[in-house]
Image (cartoon, rainbow, N blue to C red; front, side, top):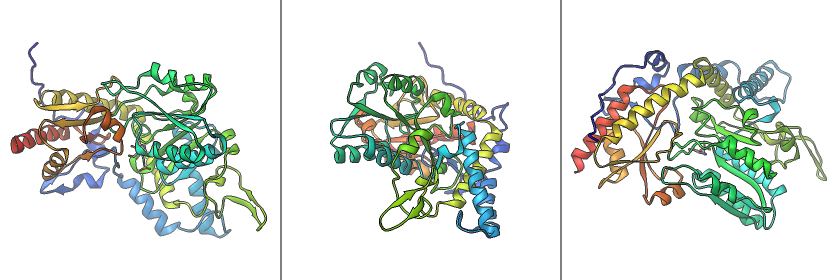
Length: 419
Ligand code: PLP
């Protein structure tokens, strides 16, 4: 069959007011190397709309104080805004109760919290923890550290050449030693969306609790933790139009209550003597010390913003971007997409024959195009595909078709320069 070159689509999608959305993001007006910024590194960190930046400034200028520890006006305001943000996050992922939302510094922090807080108490010698080949290092290393400490074993669910999990093989990993599953909802390196609802159901049928790393899913897919029935779910604010230094751990209340705190300090206690400390109730038991108050409140504003646009509208727009970009890249000889799962978010990892990913990234940057090159903290994925690194373009809802066209032109330019 003869391939027909798809036509370039520079016009915005009609039902989604993309130009209006873009105007909310001041950074998108930048020029880099005298070219308009084309920001396609959203899987690493997304950008903040003005409204979130304004919320940070308003907090710092008029509401800042430490929380929970005073009766003065500012402390009360800061505390109530912080707790308000917790409720916004609760509704965003449909958690049953706000005490099931714990603010962490990010997904990495949350996974460490569960590995230590749950793992140290409930996982012992000879027990097994199931991960998948698709994990980010953040969802591998904490479990390895735990396994080393406890004498437990890590088992890994494999993937196929499309970058999809092999579900039969995952199910075959379960046995009487299996004590925990921790897996990503969406692969940061490939964009694969895992069928986690089905996988959680299977784990639960074996009596095994499941943690979901939602760092790459919460920004793109409507999350309902009650529907998923996951035991833990985590994501980071900076990938969700919020600031750095803030993330969320959702946990079922009864599990959080049975867990050990991970960090000790102020606010996570009810009483302290040198003989004995009584821990606070959840979620405070897991929020030792002064939390990132400003960042949590700003993340709440980001959630408001995303909810106004609607996660389903966001997902639909990003799917259009993914389909168009995939079609265009597939047409370029010598360019190979790594990860062709049937269910994907808008992440395109690719390699170009004969050109190192870092050279690709450097040349694209000269055109004002920001992509990420490297192993994306997912070395087992790179090992599976036998590549040291890829170039990764990752899209957000504020990207448009013109930017896809710029990426395609940039890739062709890279080939002209190097080949
Ligand atoms: N999990 C996945 C799938 C990720 O993509 C990332 C970051 O890229 C993380 C975890 C870690 O997130 P953070 O660095 O915000 O803690």
